[in-house]
Amino acid sequence: MRTRYIQRGAEVSEFSQIPIWRRANKKDLIQIGFGLFVVFFVLSSYITAVLHLLPYDPLKINLKEMMQSPDYRHILGTDFMGRDILSRIIVGSQAYFMPGLLSIIIALFFGIMAGLVSGYNGGMTDSIISYILDLIDSIPKMVIILLAIAFFRPGIYFIMLIVGITNIPTVASLIKSKVIFLKKRNFIEAGKALGLKTRDIIFKHILWYNCKAIVIIQATLGMAEVILIETSLSYLGFGVQEPEPSWGNMVAAGKDYFFMGDFFLSTAPAAAILISILGFYLLGDGLNNLLEWRRKR
Amino acid sequence: MKYTILWKPILKLVLREFFIAILLLLSVSILIFSILKLAPGDPLHIFINIQTQNPEEIAAIKREFGLDRSIAVQYLSWLNNLIHGNFGNSFRTGRPVFGELIKVGVNTLILTIGSMIVTLLIAIPIAVISSLRRCPFLSWGLTLFAYILSSLPVFWLGYIAIYIFTKKFNLFPFLSAGAASGFRINWIYFLLPIIVLGIGNGSISEIIRHMRAQLERVLSEDYIKAAKAKGASIWRHSFKEGILIPVTTMIAAKIPFILGGAVVVEQVFNWPGMGRLAWQAALDRDYPVIMGITIFAAVVVHLGRLSQTIVFAFVNPQTSEKGEAA
Image (cartoon, rainbow over the protein chains, first blue to last red):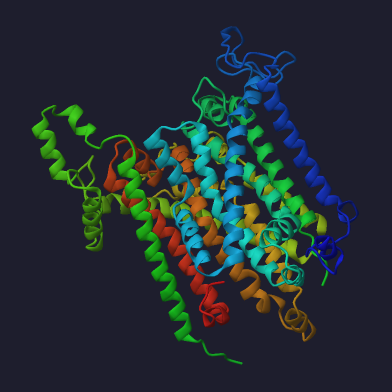
């Protein structure tokens, strides 16, 4: 009852109450549409790979059909061992998809927790948490990841766990600054005055009503970063190993043919990387424009 | 009107940040040291496999490198050496770590800082143009262009660049940067990787977004309207808050990211940098080298942040009066 009252009161959130579909403009919609298209592309290729609905076996070597240019049988051509490039690109999305989700979930969960606690409590708790986050932030991500790979020879899930941990400070600092900003607003004060539980204020009125946008945007940008890191690692030869396809090691395998004039071998997976990262960036940016649209003061 | 710089609070703030940075570096070294000791693998295997199986000799080697003592004692002796400016000797080559670190560290720093400058040269004009809102279509096109640039995989871009320069223009037989010996430095060896990393490091779009948001906010402030009304230059008035602060923020935030991208570009261009040294050292469990590299990277990151604090304090003395960094 009391919650409803606060909701109907002057302000619940700092965002505009105009519904999204009214305030969207064409640019944002184009960006979001392209982003959603890419998400659909990635999701469907993941499902195709899981269900084995591929046109060709991605691992099957067929030396009779080596280095074919694109035609109606092999839509994206074949590589230097006669393997179908389209099938390999589709299966390559498996290399980062689930591990990437794991890393995003870790980064978001711990980032949100740290941000909320240190923003709302302040004082000593804040200092300790910021110190730990600064500690994570002071070593470049790639150095941590390379060291971990060299020491533990981990699988892709462990690598993505580390990527998730290194992404915690970004999420936490965004959430924290938002919480500090919101804490002084009237509707939170009113909630406290009405005797709402602190748990309700933090999780419902701060996180759910006002921080949804940050979380969604960070998730999309996180996926773009995961693709970047996974492809870089498997390009360097540390991620997914050769017979198993990954976009990064496909580019690396095609590089020897690059100087003979066969661009397609490494350009096709590079284009897949480009389009997916671009899609997630544009989705994040479009959502940012749409959801973080402030009311004119 | 001339305003006086309040040196005392700024100095206090910078000292505070410096102290915190030192504390963080200490914690980083403790963390990395304990992970090194907990990780499986033994630095001795490179000696033992090759030279000896005799337990007494193994014990002697251990004693020589100080590996027979407890972890805490090892760490403290490492720290003691560090304070005296000695990073220890590499297990593998036996040479002092400091010299090797400087040699490859300078290469990596050139790559990182150079590509940071290239990135800024691309990003700042686009951000300024699109924050003016004179021509929405142009600004959207430029932003889209920046997004495409920042999602290009940097290794593929590297191959394209090498291909264009070697095959099409016949500019040079492609060798590594290390082959450019002596004083006759072929500048293209240095410029090509720097430009490739500057374009493809993936942070252009984020820099543009941050800068555009800040510039738009500043340009809509009242003091800019006042400046416009009296006919003064807008850019002189909005430079500090609208350009200087976002640029320093982004430089400090993106240095670790570009250091990471440098590892990949070093591989593509055969650039003798820190990434390769780190990888080799980690494989060999070459503890002093790994510690040196980690500390070096952390110091670079913290130098970036410290310079950000200094710029903030000078631009906006309020932050230093409160005694907290913005």
